[in-house]
Image (tube, rainbow, N blue to C red):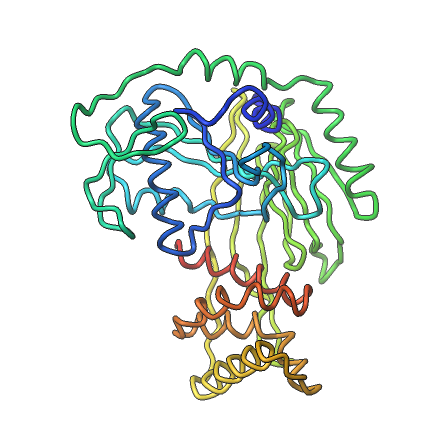
Length: 378
């Protein structure tokens, strides 16, 4: 098994950006330009490495390789995005890798790209790239190529060496468990479970019991063997169950207008461990959006816009407006789920304004956007 933290360190320490490795400060696949650029790089890396893995490391400064991290990104549906826009799409995964020096909730994103062995191309137009375009890597740049298209294997030995140096061992696994429980989550309920004598899953959270069932908030779940963060949330609640072969989480989100709040199941994730040293993660969106009166939602939608404008003008808010502002991300989310398509754009546009005004509301905004991504990709 590969320790993904060691893999990231090896990529950063021994390689400039090249035909099997790229690094980014962040990616923005919520907008067309960011989505198009991400797809271009995925296509180019897949075509430049038909027989081995390629990687994109996210959360790193370009100039000096400083690890600054990005927000936890738990969208397992990123493969759907690639499948929708690329012909002969590669197999792609996005993993959240914790680093000790990063602040809580920050991770390094690792995108792993595995070619199918066929030429990958854009299926349809997106941003300024035309359908049918084929991209390859030339050094650190992803460029379109028209003539003499041929897949060449030139990096297998280099990638194999990097992955070999990132292999796990017992010491690293034990150190990871101790660090997770005793250092990073010493004030929370922490547990671990060993599956198939190989895999160690650690989880921590604030636990409460409701009608004979335990719920966790402020949840952090990691697969210690590979140093991969499987789940992280500062707000929402989940249930955790497991048996000898699998580990299952069901995530709940709290939604409602005013005091009428209710928990709704959002997504079920099952990690199944095999005796041959492999595992599979299957996620199933089980969310059914609550429906509300359109007239009431029009009033809330317009009121949210009014609050944003007041904050832009640095005008003081009344006590009632302050309360409405605390609920702004959640009510925009409800509006979107009930057909107000522009609500997502309003959230995206106001994120930096809200971050500067109220950090707590900003955390709620990030959670709302995370839920919107899940619902959109499904």
